[in-house]
Length: 189
Image (cartoon, rainbow, N blue to C red; front, top):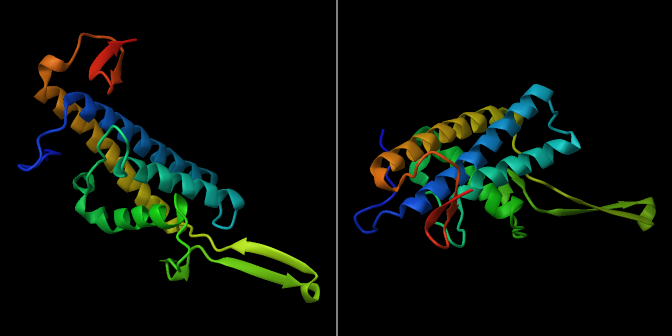
């Protein structure tokens, strides 16, 4: 299935932007796959302190290519397979409301308040503690996220090949090149 980025209203993004964006997205999604594999392989329990940190990394890395960035266009939801649209929207919302930004106005995630701060009072008020109710992805979601990210890795690789086929004159000779968005050039390393 061909993957298109531009519509009739918007001209195609330049060759350098397409490659940069696809490479960045590919690496982000590949990192998500590896983190999901790590959680599964090491059998990290849901209540382990590191679990929250790992799923926060998964969520942040997954959402990065879809978010606004200075100097490069974000990926559109077109890249997300239809069967994963609901999961994609959940991940983006989780990132926007709890992971990257703190929305203190009763955001709910999986039926519970996501960012509420809890005051714990002990010993008749002599000992106070604070805790935060954190949104965590359920372990059952990790397999789905891995499948989604793995599919996006494949789509990014196909997209890169499609861009190279569409702009054969812009693909340089064998070698390693820095995609320089400021100068819109490929600089040999």
